[in-house]
Length: 315
Ligand code: GAL
Image (cartoon, rainbow, N blue to C red):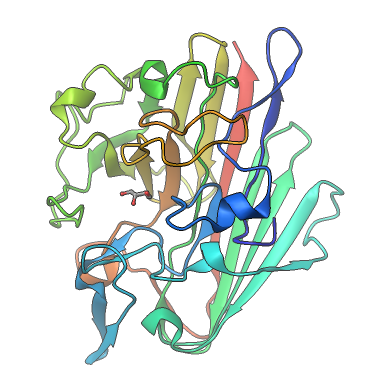
């Protein structure tokens, strides 16, 4: 959808052959325009996740950003890319099953320097995987961190929470955060802690040991330049398996903690806590203020390029 670059529906056959929708969404634009819509299916920019105190310093200059999250900046500020009208372009591939959306963010928008040209291509590959390719260019140095905020529930009918989904994350560390979900800069090991998803476990097994639930950036193992397997989610009920591959170094695993029944999904049911999960591929949160994290600064003449692939199969 050109509003917010939003992924509205993902229809996948189940064991019985019926097509089920695996993502949260609304059936009209009015649903997406609701105040405080929690970024359902949306394209996130300029900076996915949080930037502490809604500011950063670059070459001695302080940039103040939209402080839309308890004094911090979240998902691009007050009016991020999720609330912009994107322009549909001829897709960058020959495939008929692809859509490219573009957005020109003016210099200074939400406090960010530089005129940023962003594009995202949603493409259904021959093997039925969904590939998202993000690109961006700028005319001034500026932080960029694009992602997508699709909420998955592999059961299709959403008859149960995602607490029984078995998640594997190919990550040995995570970025520790304070109570406001701002990284402390430390990268603790997950092994032997409630954050350990290296061998796969139901989301609900240790969630009570994690204050607020899972809402953390996991540091992905990287073994090459192309998209690498980052996450695997199995829904034992439906037998569906979601695999996610990415070129990014991090993924925010969010267990839908803030969902509170205020919004109704297109199926008419309230979107309650833990009824869907997000896997937001990204650079690490607050990187512009964390010199020990990989840089997110895009320079003029350079091209931002990020690829994430989602594939659903049946066990
Ligand atoms: C997630 C973020 C959560 C919450 C959510 C939107 O990406 O990690 O803390 O802000 O978006 O409700």
